[in-house]
Amino acid sequence: MPKYIFVSGGVSSSLGKGISAASLGRLLESRGRSVTMLKCDPYINVDPGTMNPYQHGEVFVTDDGAETDLDFGHYERFLDVDMRRINNITTGQIYASVIAKERRGDYLGDTVQVIPHITDAIKRQFRAVAKGHDVVIIEIGGTVGDIESLPFLEAARQMKQDVGEENVIYVHVTLVPYLRSSNEIKTKPTQHSVGKLREIGIDPDLIICRCEQPISREIRDKISLFCSVPRKAVIDAPDVASIYEVPALFQKQGVDSLILRRLAIRSSRKDLNQWHKWISRLKSPSGQRATIAVAGKYTDLRDAYKSLQEAIIHAGVHNGAKMDIRYVDVDRADLVQELKKSDGIIIPGGFGDRGVEAKIGVARFERRTKTPFLGICLGMQCAAIEIARNLAKLKNANSTEFDRGTPHPVISMLEGQRSVTQKGGSMRLGAYQCRILAGSQARSIYRRPQTTERHRHRYEFNNRYKQALEKAGLKVVGVEPAQNLVEIVEFQPHPWFIAVQFHPEFKSRPNRPHPLFRAFVGACLRNSRRRRRATGASGSPQHCEVGRRARK
Ligand code: GLN
Image (tube, rainbow, N blue to C red; front, side, top):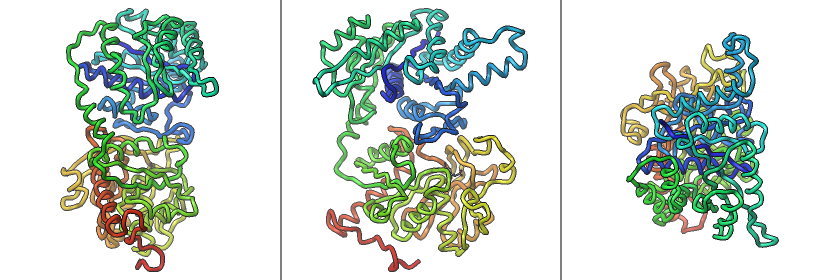
């Protein structure tokens, strides 16, 4: 019988509930259990694919093409398992399925209601996900007290009834604020939030207290007394420098043993050593460092590039280096000055035409200055447009996403895609095969002839222009075999210029950094050393030939 751990949140959003849930998962895995995750999102959107990343952070894509929120990235990175579509439910999906059943007449004339029809549909998914695993950790999005999350909490409450007390526990992640004016830590919001949870019929077994600083024994006692949980089950979760420290923080407080005991799971294994080792490498880099500019649009909200950031960090740790990531808004007036400060440039994925011309300019800058470059999805498309315009002399070349009437659609939609009107329907989503050409730089980086990578885009490299662009130096070195779609290009006159149609960042894990990021970071570190040697530690880099002196 699988065990169910429900994780709810109280007082405020953005407490890092996803990280807490993922950390519990990591800990239980370290005790030799097979763990999976499920996230319940209370919004009515069917998936976050159509949501603005300004509001919601990045859209994380799974192998099977589900568009999920960024917590799935944490789950995959902490547990080192691949999530699937089934691991996410939204209110929109549940209602859509119940309404479809009602229209088919499956309810045989019943009045269809939140309880039991919606809650039954939710519980069915809880069970389906749990199948084949020892433990499923179910994160309930939103904050206790929100109208939207009620059906999920109600389903969570019923599960104890359905599968028995010894198979379910409830974890509540709450805010314990520090008030500067009175120099006090306050427990009242937590008491209220636990009270709210009790009104719904859920007694928390474990309370994770998010606080700016560690909480004292007194505060712990107070929360234990007022919220009726044992003192050991009040977990201190102060802010930490890196999210990867959280599993160890929980382990130090015996959270794993507490959960195992409560769920009557026997385990003698305890193995978080690799994780500890990795953290110490993260915290004490060898002294090397490099600056990477991410030239994008959503630079105000770092969460929009969460997986990208993590992939750079993983690759940095692998190289024993500290990475300084600068998010550079391509619309700023001093863009070139900003780019000159960096040892490597990434143009990340993106949608819509705002900032695209500037990104094409970034690709040009970087081609001419020979700064290591990694183009991702839109970044690859911008690089192809740039080389088409400036080297292949295809005047006004563009993507049909930005200029429908362009005379040279080097990036365009495939035939057949155009007739799809449902948003999201025309996207290439999830994992696709990629064959990598022998002799290419990508092949030496991947060290194998074939790989799979995840996608989320509508437009493709137009094979009609392959020959012209290859003549200009941009070689197609990775291809999706079934439809002959271009996946990886390299600008071969350049020491490190690789652009990809997919999103490699989704597949990077702390212990297994993605090969492209690993190699890119390596190139940035070499560039950083070269620049230092050439200029002294702080001077301006000499290799940055821009403007009139540059030849092309
Ligand atoms: N907007 C581009 C497309 O749809 C790129 C998408 C992306 O970068 N994820 O093809």
